[in-house]
Image (cartoon, rainbow, N blue to C red; front, side):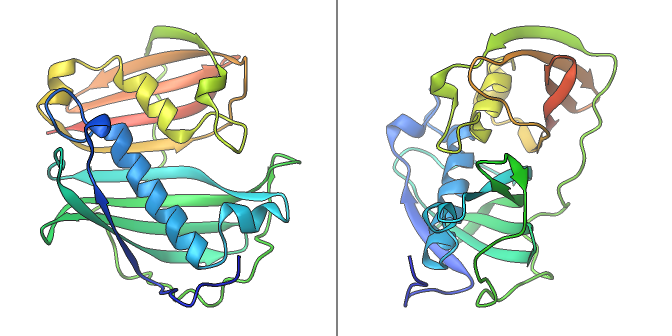
Length: 246
């Protein structure tokens, strides 16, 4: 698609929280929070002419590499949230995008995300084939208190789960969707920690893609105010999640 006449370098989009997105306590699930952030990023790339459809003309797609989410509170069922997004940096094959979520003008979530241009045929990163100079960049405008980071995976970890990747785990890039990793891990967290909104922030590192019928192992390690999950395939780390507790 061509660049929209409504394109702006900072986009705000409203979403109404419906009951399918909520946990039993009536508040937005952490997985659906990530979905709303990703959908807003996708909406911005679409009006800016660098969407998945645009990029597929060159066998390219944006793939999430790292993500940090800081949460003061979660929205609840029937809330209308405003998600605001802009780009910190964009060059060659890499982009850093910021996102914030508001309810009634109050910021409740901040996120910093790191994306890589991925060739869906060669399965390798490469330079973005589309023009992007029309995006104004905002490197000084931060959405989070801390930037995303490389998660340190401990050797002293416990195996908690074995899984085979199924069709329902895949997205239209034909690999495990980023939210699926989070979902797998959160299923092994004490439900009271989730329902009481005790997650202050979390980070995800996506290290190697997983495909249909891959066999993976989920590991967990604990430390003070922190839980780290990692997912391995053939003893190689594919994903890491760090949960920081209040």
